[in-house]
Length: 302
Image (cartoon, rainbow, N blue to C red):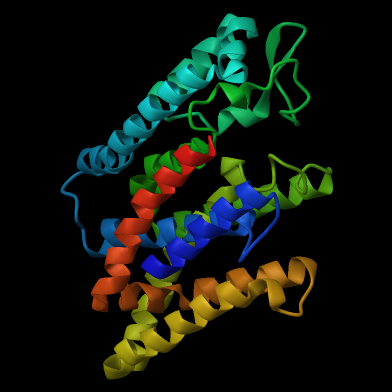
């Protein structure tokens, strides 16, 4: 999955630089990352059993993210100080105390960074808002690394994963609820608007759970069906996903149909990409490199 994750990261970076969708686009890339996360976390919790306890899982996941985040945060604050980044420091000067407390907590511990996009300051008070831009102060500008809101969503996935992923019936139940929630938001006119499109944890849980089902349902079947040809099949399937990611803007399908097609194909083929990563050292290496590069580019975009 290393090459694919790198391409998805590039999709996000290019969207920030060009303010337009390149490759699969920023929104699709983020949600594809959620699918990969669901697949991998399901693997480590239910198949490899890499952690002896839920506590060990939480500590490992947090430490995998936090030291790199701290380094990026220190570099960013230093850059802000030298560049006199007025918009960042002004948030804390003019926001109410409740907003300052939330932002400091989110910046220090990473949790709740996604929540910032569902709050606003109106008449000097911190309130829930359906549009974070309808605010006297744009609170997200008080995040040290604004792009790290996705990590806030991921951490929430990690919190529930040990409780949910070992129980298949619970996965299906939560998946149904998540889909119903998205349908409801679309019906009332919020579901197609930022931040509800891909920042709202209850609806984004769909992708995490679909990734876990891809691991638990599809991967065992592929191992039986393809048996000795699994390695060769993984090469073709991963090549197809890489080619599809690069060629995605040119695919002659429009709108929602194109997006649904992208996610359906990815969910079906991601077990092959997982097998390919385990068999291909270069893909594994590029995956680790892309993980570090994502944080580097987040810092460069701040």
